[in-house]
Length: 583
Image 1 (cartoon, rainbow, N blue to C red):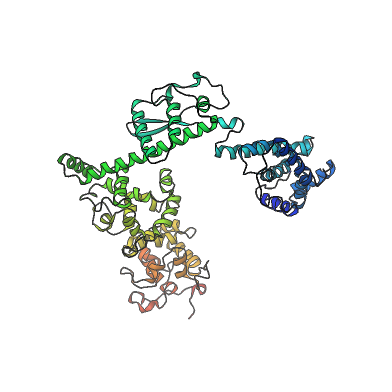
Image 2: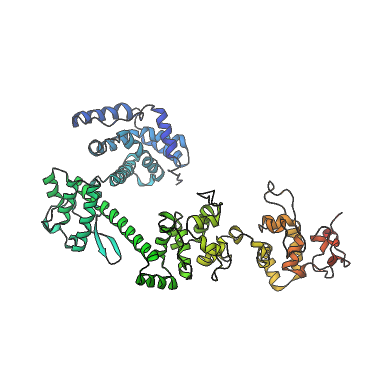
């Protein structure tokens, strides 16, 4: 049986039906909630006048259209939908009371429209061998689909829908030596009997918790973030003041609220308390770190010196970066801050982790994602203060990380001064490891990269090794095979991007395949000639160009005006006609 994709067809089906019944979804209004009887009559009238336009298909007609639709006939599929539109409406109207009560901003039109994808899915999955009518088959798909749709919508709004209202488990506050934790507990459900036996012992709050919660609630009350009624509901539910614990039902009876509304108010207060305590805890840690770095007290200075020698951990590095950059409460770099390699590494990581998604990728060792994020946010970084900084990587680490001292100072554990690449090599060496697929190329991140001849050798060989069989021949030192492959793939190279590279040949090969445009185009001290591919070959494989060896390349093959150079004045070996260069 041939199946078609529902996701790619839903919008076209909706558009076709909307054109046929124009005005159906224009300016949707909530259903009138005057009386259930009036609402029911209006729904029935709507279904009979709007949805029952086309008669029901006969079995033979339906089967014929389904065959065509499963074969990819869009017209047949739309005709089936039009004839079964009333079926969707009859199923959707079962939820009209729920829509009127809990979701007045959603009309019956919306729900019927949401049923179209499930009807399309029913068309795709209908099997004639089952021996059941299509309407029976489609009813199951539409009914289950609309139920799932309603559950998804109501769960986002905190509205009970069948058993789904018992899925979300509220949480209670829990403290330990490391700070605030949020642990899940079972709450009383709206559908369960209200008994004292359902109250769990772990819901009781300790003395330490109570003191912190009382302080947080007092602050929230003073700022108007919560009301006294919300405070009282929270106190009674969690028995903050050692009074009898109230159930959700009992709270609802006392305050004249539904159980669902009481639960919502209790949850809102709990979330506000957690947010307040987390914020307060971070601010306290910032104050402690600032005191540690700036205090003149001898005991505090001893502790600071110990940390400067041994290194700050990642969490402490985050606090230091925040003080230096976000709040600017620490306007200078503490002396000796970069003494320990561990401190520098954690500060670099804390700076990179400000990139959205970078820390998650780093925790998963997702090199490709980290490389893409680095290109987007670091290499292409735009300075916030263009009068003080230029764009690019170094500015990112100086402006976002406050690492000017680390970049500009000569430090023994960094490979280079003034280089953002040196920071990456030190903190995340795997991010620029050529042996790992998807990493950053050193050419992307290091200024003055070609000053080191080893870098030129590496990339030249990397480009040549893309030629099938060249690396194996190089490892065997097979000059004849290497020369043959060079003639075939490099000298006769055809540019892939003809808009960017107007000519074919060796220079284009090393530019397009190897990315060596800057190496070839600029004056490099260790290359004997600028703009010469022969200079690159002599740098990495000097025996591959030898006029005295009939197996090797002749200088006249790989270099223009080769005999103007003294080393090429030896009489060349006669070349086969196919390799001779015409004047």
